[in-house]
Image 1 (spheres, rainbow, N blue to C red):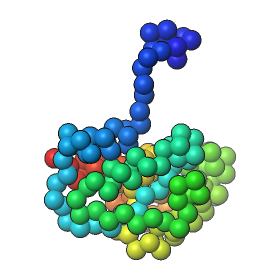
Image 2 (image 1 turned 45 degrees about the vertical axis):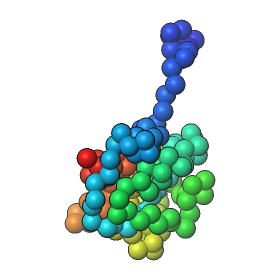
Image 3 (image 1 turned 180 degrees about the horizontal axis):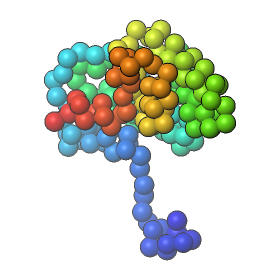
Length: 149
């Protein structure tokens, strides 16, 4: 916002996935030896297609011990929307259908957990799952926190 706050001109902002990937790579954040888990990652619309951030979340996840990342059929630029923000506000039936479509794609990977870098995506996926399945959806920061010391 240099036009509004001139002092901000030299400030570089980063997404938390970029910070986590760098911290894990440098050793500032250390992975715990955890139980082996197979995960898949959902690319959020704004983070991926909006900001072009695809690698950092995957780098962070791959740096965690015992984690196997399995890609969904449609990923990165080709990932489907979760249906939450742009769709859900105006077309509630379509947001549930979209979330279910994406969850079907997740189930096809055989992964145990679905990780996403967006709280809206997490909320929308959990909304359509039965109560006992909701814990299979995690935010990237939650998952990294669980697997680091």
